[in-house]
Length: 401
Image (cartoon, rainbow, N blue to C red):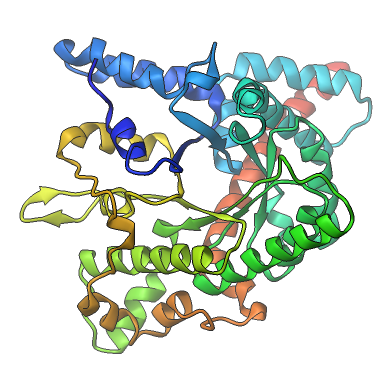
């Protein structure tokens, strides 16, 4: 049986990991959709490749080494199986008389995270805590509320030992990373786009490790990753508006190299600085077209790194469609971005803020355009889940009344 495109990618570095960027609760449906859309002659081979990605009855054999979720993905998981979740919501309503929609939503969200963590728990145990983490995100609507983030993190971490807390790379989130690390709670920094943010949370994790060791905290199963949301950085309208103001024409390739250059520099600086956090890439996008051929530089140009890719269905689908046309050079991540593209980016304030280690002050993290956009997107999904749960609560209360 031939290797899948994901298996070829992972072989470029022994430390490389690929995670599933969605709830594991929808994996089976996604496989069915992919196989049913494939040509008849390819169905059997494709299904075998996809099922090797996540082996539900023996996760230790899976290609996937972990899982990330966020509010939109959690909402999707609930809506994809309304029969199951409506039953669970009804049970929570019955078991918590007088509960409001907000608190009920938090209980439902914790169940989504817990179910996913249980699915990956065997991999966590088989790897002695190295792999098998499932990320649970703090409420994005409260990204400046440090004390609430502490409390929510404690609740999520208590669900299963393989729950990793997604903390925002906001001014307040930096301190949350330090605090959680000092208690050996694993973190995945999200809403993170710029090198200043990456370095700030990397330092916070390093300081948290030092505090934990001084206090005799067991760190043997602690891990930390820092997510660079590459597509959400390079797609913002502010980049093109500033480029236009500066009289700079940015091609699709230039914008791709911008995001890749930030990631490559962050990877190098974390490695050279001895930081304990691992870089994670998300929000990948296919492209650009090169000589009439579709490339996937977000994947190809970072091959060979000791990094994590977290790949959602919309990232995996073009990878499988391109298949053997994707080229994975074993040291691509160490190759610099073209100077011509970098020169353009470093004439634009938005580019300087992302690429220069001192491009943003801590106080500017919360107002960066990519942060504002992503927090709004995640908050909309959190509101959507609360609306879904609230409607169910109202319906049950109406029946009871």
